[in-house]
Image (cartoon, rainbow, N blue to C red; front, side, top):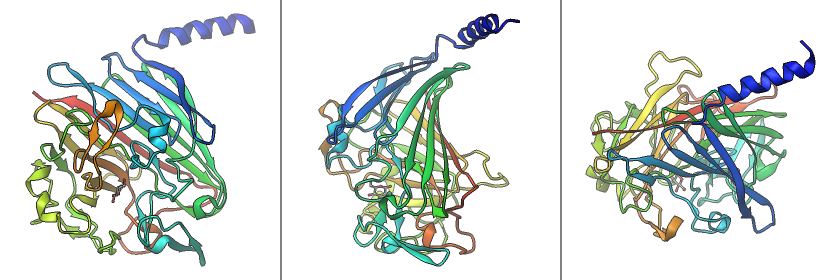
Length: 379
Ligand code: BGC
């Protein structure tokens, strides 16, 4: 076949596989204070579920899903414009978090005998990748795609060697894909030209009654975890694993978040802010396991979190201060929760500790992480 004819045939085939249901649009979201253009993407599936993403922070900024009566609500926190995301009211809403999500003790770690100092942006500790150039604050390049009945955006960003104190030039991609089963899949990958540490996650705040509903305490949570990783009073993991049995952290049977939360109010976490050790059974590396299921009994909306990671941080929004977000809605204390899939917190300072997680990425290796947020309804 002549090349031009082949091109026509493959174009025609391409149009055929592109179902009408999977759609992605791209628009201008505005500019950062520094004048960098930010793009907004909207994915739609055949059920009409919509997911919005921003190139600043490769962030999940909207998820419209129906309740049991078909009434649609946006269930994640965010802002109407880039300025909102750049303001102090933004508590990592929906962002890709890193280069190391969660805390690193005393804002330092040693790798191959060399000490690296990071920003102490959470008391004496380091949190979520640093102060000014953490992954939530930089603008990624987003490329939209539609194929085989799904739509998505592949974001990429290269973090230079030494950015926020982390060693190695790190090339990263984060791909969001929406299918017709109302599943939003997030695939992370990264490579580094020097040994480094890595822990990427997504920091979406969910309230399945609709973001801006007053509380998350009425949601029912199930966590597939027999153990959690206890913390000291600066929220740094002690290196132990402890059973959830007999504690307010036992969510192996679905339980309302508010039922026992007050037992934790006097702890430094002020409520739920714990990393759970996902029961992975015989699942091998890269195999997906159900880690959590969140149900809003009022609306019937459900969210199941499925991942190949060893840990999940369940953060119950204790530090939210009632700032205003999208459409002027108030995001108050404990009005949403994050379910962040990841390695165990402070792994850079626990290298070699038995039973702990590995977070070291070496040249030639590839970091991979997948997480599915699957939305549904219960009658
Ligand atoms: C942490 C909280 C922290 C919050 C900041 C969560 O991932 O577990 O301790 O306050 O992020 O948004």
